[in-house]
Image (tube, rainbow, N blue to C red; front, side, top):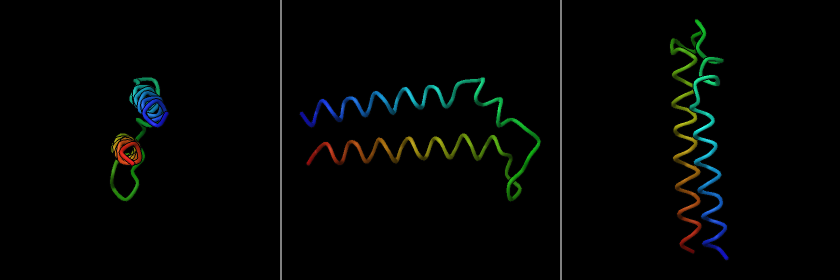
Length: 65
């Protein structure tokens, strides 16, 4: 049961990442706006990347218990 739930969460996270890094969504954040001197698109990409890694690590760690 837990392996099936972990597998579903991993698939959902992968689909979320694929959608989040899709070109039309990236174009929304490709503006000449900087937050603390960092372009908004960089903050978006690295923020989503870090969130996906954190969620994947959490799913894998919880799946071992």
